[in-house]
Image 1 (cartoon, one colour):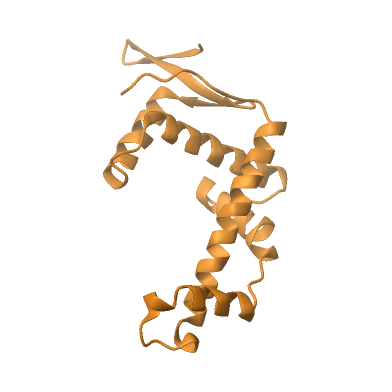
Image 2 (tube, rainbow, N blue to C red):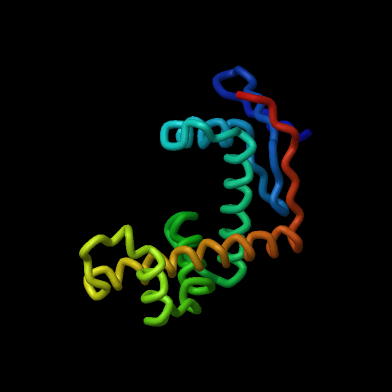
Length: 154
C-alpha cells in the first residue's frame, strides 16, 4: 500500500492509493468522492465497481493522450478517443434497423419504421460502441500495469 502524506495547516492528511494504472494513482479520497456521487444515481453500486470504472476511464484517457488527443478535460479526451477510434468505424445499415424494428414490433405499436429509424440506428450504434469499448478496455488492461488493492466497504 502507498500513502500520500500532505501537510495542511500543520495537520497531516494521509491518503492511501487504492489503484494504479501504469504510473498514475487513484487515491482513496478520489474513489470515495466518485463513489458518493455515483450512489446518488446508481444506489446499488459497489466501491469495487466505481474503482473499476475509474481504472477504465484512466486507461481510455491514457490511450487518448498516447494518440495525441487533446482536450480541456479528461472527459473530453475520452469522448474524442471513443469518437475517433471506436464510433467512427461503426456503420448500421438499413437491414439491421429493419430487423431490430421487426423483432421488437410489439414495442412500436402503430408507429412506422421511417419515423423511428434514426432512433433505432442511434441505439444500435451505441450498443456496438459499448461492445467494442468493453473489448478495447480489456485489450488495454492486458498491455498496461493495472492494480486495484483490496477495498473495504465505505
